[in-house]
Structures are given as structure tokens and as C-alpha cells.
Image 1 (cartoon, rainbow, N blue to C red):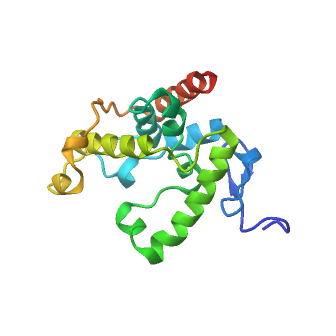
Image 2 (cartoon, rainbow, N blue to C red):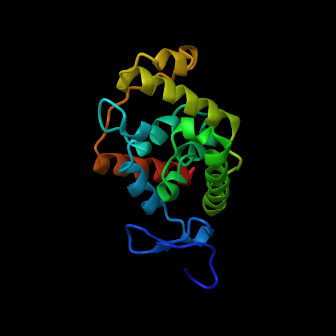
Length: 181
């Protein structure tokens, strides 16, 4: 632990330190986000194929108005540093409460770093739910899936289950396009 930082640091793939309890905008890098999200499987790995958070975010970025696309691409960027917590745990105040506080703090830092609107626009939240519904229909075998999401809000996307290297590249390519707009 550093004297001037809150909490402990974690190793980031490109050789930097990151303090998840004390995030700073100048320590957030798109390459780190793309790498980590491309290597993290959605639904805690309970899918028919490897399906990355990076691909999920890429799909979300096409389901919103153009002016919200960069926010949609980066809406799960905090997971690159914190990982994710499955919804059943996130919904428990004693478990989800502390995680959500850290997540929101980091999302605000990420938004500041990339000059995004935060809290995320409502279109991003709707796109996230619509893409989740499509994911559940296409890559999850579960007798419960109809109980979990409203199929009337399903996004028209084809889940492709990109391997991490492709997910990372597509995420970065999309970022490059959107950050120029």
C-alpha cells in the first residue's frame, strides 16, 4: 500500500499499477480496458461459448444513438479493473452495496478520462438490457432464461463469440472510430 493512496494496487497487463479503491483518470488507458474486457467472459462463464465483455460492449455501442455510442462502448469499462459481480449477488445490499459504490466511483473516473456523460445516458441502459436479452436467447441454455428478461426488448444482434484477440481488436477499432466523432 502506498502512503498517499487508498487501498492496495493491482497489476495491469501493460506493466502499470492501478488502485481500484483510489482510481485516477490519468491512470486509465483504453488499451488496458480493451485487453481485460476481451479476456473476461460474460455471465461468469456460464455460456455456450466464450463470449467477452468487450464483444458485449461493442454490440451495445451499435444499439444507441450515435451521440451515446462511446458511452455504450465503455459502459462496462470498470469491469476491466474490478471484475464483475453476478446480478444475484449485486442485488444483495450487503454484498452489492460496497461493490456498486466502487463501480460507480470508477465509472465516474472513466467518464472523466474519456470525456463521457455520466451517469450513463438512459439509451445505454436500455441497449444493455436489449443486448443481454439477445445474449440469453443465443448463447445460454437455461430453463430460466424466459423468466430473466423481457424478450420484447431484445436487440437485433448476432452474438459471434469472438476469441479474445479479435474482441480486443474490434473494441479498439470501434473506440478509434467513436473517439474521432
